[in-house]
Length: 316
Image (tube, rainbow, N blue to C red; front, side, top):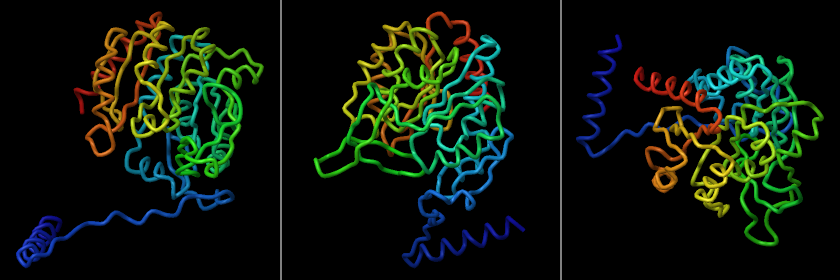
């Protein structure tokens, strides 16, 4: 039945094209952005084998339904880290509604600290996190230094993006903490060996505010490098690369937005990272990168992860 229907569609399309018309398939209408108190209207999606509530207006809802293996690399990384360091903890910054938490817990029985500043996402994060043990939730925004800053918020309720306030009359004042403050404030002996940051451009600042953790625990880091969001903040990717190298982070793996392996870099490939960063932008085939970074002392872990990446790449 499918083939005759396809032939009919092609015939109709060809006839209309001949008359000067074209058929354009419009994307489905997305529900409005979620608001506080709408948890009962959220969809339930399986993530990491667990039922996770996600607002229907959150693109993650469709993304996980179309690709259940979304963010599977986080699970692979968590499993490797937990195997190598049995007492390790994970930190999930930009935890959203707890989808990454579910992926981590699906692969590794490790304590997880989840940090989320958006009140709408945090509301569902609280609900979703109840099904897991050893989860510590913190509702705050993070940056490279503590204090109050005036910012503008975009995509609130599902993918909050912070930018500098353009005028004195615009934006709103938010209180920021550093990740070092947050972990220290929990008063627990947390050995952070996996640190995930996905905060739509603030990733570089947040990692600068985690210098104490990076020096002490030397965690595997995974973060998003999105030129569209980083450039308006005026942060230097080159300076940030130097910051990581100075902390003895020498091994880098770059993935595309859907988790596809691109390449591996070392501490001498600063210019390569900058070239790739300049290439990436919205509308390009690769418009941002997910980057994994390994400390010099974790070379063996890096090589195991890289081997997994290359094996997945050959299979795809």
